[in-house]
Amino acid sequence: MNIHIVALAVSVAIFLFVIDLVRRRRLTFKYAVAWLLVSIGAIFFAIFYRLIFVCAALLGFELPSNFIFFVLFCVFILLSLLLTVFLCQQSNRNDVMAQKIALLEFELKELKKSKNT
Amino acid sequence: MNTSSKKILVIVPAFNECGNIGRTVKEIRSAGTGVDILVIDDGSLDETSQEARDAGGMVVSLPFNLGIGAAVQTGFQYARRYDYDVAVQIDGDGQHDSGYLGKIIAPILHDEADMVVGSRFLENIGGFRSSFSRRIGINFFVHLINMLTGVKVNDPTSGFRAYNKRMIALFSDYYPHDFPEPEAVVVAQQARARITEIAVVMRARSAGSSSIRYFKTLYYMAKVTLAILLHMIRQKGRDR
Image (cartoon, rainbow over all chains, first blue to last red; front, side, top):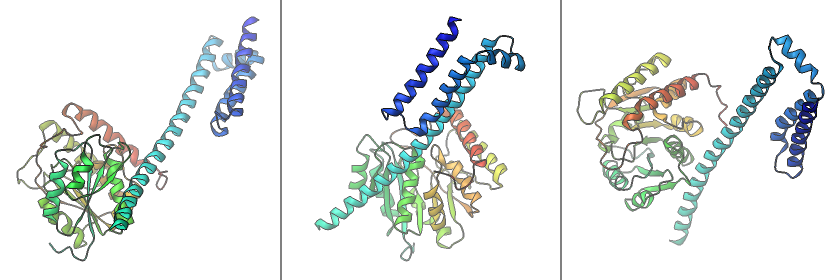
């Protein structure tokens, strides 16, 4: 029985941690959504843990723990893919800005030069 | 060479090309009168930009190293902003002979092509023609691009190219970033560009080292192939 209490406590802690990060503006809503959903899911399964056994049996997992690992693995792959997408977006924007800055800097220098002569 | 009516920009991407870039810029200046030379200093740590400026080139300095593709793209963006008719890309390491400048822009000036690639392998006119292993790699891309697009470009990794206004606009919006030359051919072909090649002689590098090292040839091939294949499945107009 203890294991369920531990599981529930950990999932609630993660949920509260995410909420706190949003509250302190360390995490914007856009990025918090995925983590909130994951922690709510964790709380749900910590409460209705019998569902895990049912799902595991239905899908043909011999051990419920294997089912848990499998689900966790999928969730993390998805989350890291999402992170890579965000990263790509940031990196593209970085490049675009670097190019714009370089061109503006060049124009500014030319402008100053022509003003001085 | 009659260039009086057209605005021509020579884009020279350079990353740590101290010792090469000054000579390259001077060479271009003596080869093409009336052309503007824009050196894109791709976040060099040495005196590349000062050397280029002293040699009489305009220098745009990127705040950090973005890679050759983004550097060249910056040149296209400049060309578009200042309404250039022709853009020529010449590598900053001095391996391209700017004596061919007139020859490479001729098809653009006569409106016979949208994009001209300076090719080492078109005619047997000598010069530096790359190591054996790299020529196998280059040949692989010739066939890959030919298979995917139906266009035959004999030297798809050549960074000695000329473009017209339409290509300038296209590439300032999207230009492949990492090892862009072969992929740019595919991008151009998909935009239904008229691509021609002219024969040029290239030199071996005199100072510094090429961004593609010998033992990295295979890695380069795999990466560019993957990039080209990924490009083929990309949705159009969704770059940013």
